[in-house]
Amino acid sequence: MNAPLSPVAPPEETTVPAVEVALAPQPSVVRRVLRTMRLWVDSHSSLQSEEDGRTPLKVDWLRLMPFLGVHFACLAVIWVGWSWPAVIVAGALYFVRMFAITGFYHRYFSHRSYSTSRFFQFVMAAVGNSSVQRGPLWWAAHHRHHHRTSDQPEDRHSPKQQGFLWAHMGWISAKANFRTDMKLVPDLAKFPELVFLDRFDTMIPFALAMSCLGLGWGLSVFYPELGTSALQMFIWGFCISTVAVAHGTFTVNSLTHLIGRQVYPSKDTSKNSLIIALITLGEGWHNNHHYYQSSVRQGFRWWQIDITYYLLWMMSCVGLVWDLKPVPQKVIDAAGKLNAPATDATPAAAT
Ligand SMILES: [Zn+2]
Ligand SMILES: [Zn+2]
Image 1: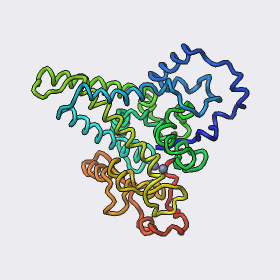
Image 2: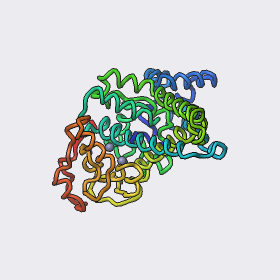
Image 3: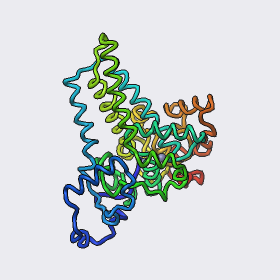
Image 4: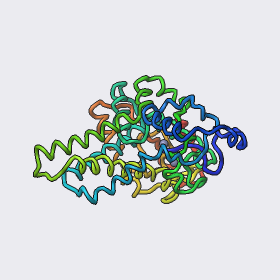
């Protein structure tokens, strides 16, 4: 949930003088389209891109087309209507994929707040990838960068630095934020299966979209009384739930740095919000998290609802995950002491 270059301040990659960039030969439209299509299939094909060193911090509209397309596709609900099976599948896919973002991409891959087996680590990466928020290494690298530079000019999605819209969704569309910075995720990059998922990050989302179409078609043929169809299941199960998961996640980058209460001296604008915690299954306790990042819990108090933690705790009971990192009592006790010095318990956990 984080990344470094403001739309105002140029990113590290834009250190090439502006005049030099302006004079450099620009690729033709056909070439740009072909390059973008290649990136949709193989996102790592840009690691040595000729554009490296002069990537502008602005919206890459070509790359953004599928993302916008899924938004517009939601309007098709006017024509395809609804049915209980389609709505239930949409709700289930929202819940599972939001949990995969918060419990897997965030609390495991970004912060390593618990342990698991190599096999289940791959399963978690694959389910997280189905949320259509790029690969696990890209997600973790950008999030780790957010914690390192939170609300500073280098922060890639700070509403304080770049405004609400850019922090909410503009930043993900910038070429400067496209690449996975492997230097920030050396602990993950040593697993070839994770690098594979990160590289071909549209493969699983495409398979999920096709599965929704197939499920809807199957139900319409074998259980016509349910009143669903291939297109209806695709719109609800894939499009609507993907857009909901995306904006739910984005609120953590934007709104939790704008609204709510700050109870810890985290040296940034992070805040706690019950409403966002409910929408995001526990990520709304963002000020808690910025103050102490390495805990598997983000709701530090019993009344701070944190569904992701409850589910991870249940998974630990059956042995899928283990070594859940707790919140030290001194961190809990520091709540409300905004003038207190930062606790040394605040880890560089994201690294
Ligand atoms: Zn975090
Ligand atoms: Zn934050």
